[in-house]
Image (cartoon, rainbow, N blue to C red; front, side, top):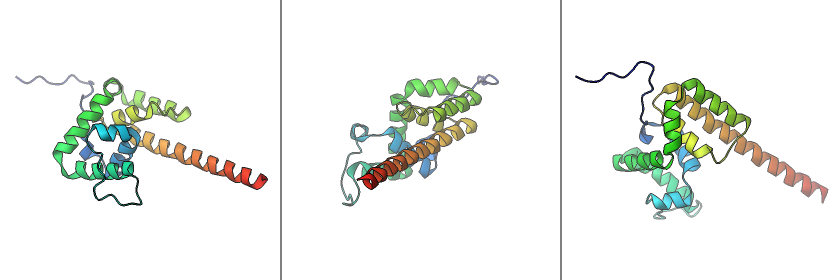
Length: 164
């Protein structure tokens, strides 16, 4: 006899990185994987790297491609991200969609760069659509914050230049 899941109990488990849209996959790799991480997962390779692109960016591009066509790479990266961010993944899996939405709202009010990688992966890899949507929102909010900061830096530099 197969055990039936309890009603209102979240389904634990992750969506595969290969199931995510390419934009979200690429964003997660940028947010979650630095040079050291790319080296540790075995994706630090400069073969055929265009000279206009940094090695770190090139490795992320190649990782996106590898996960799209190679199930072994997809599973490897899924396992690596799940284990690397295990505490946050497990916490998100037991949170309700409303709690996840509130967590993202709090992040938007006070962006926390340290929390971003783990929270992004945990939300985007959750099997519940409402939770995944909050992961997409978080990534887009982080992009907006980054853009705003870059514009502010540029404006401050232009103001200093004008004063000289």
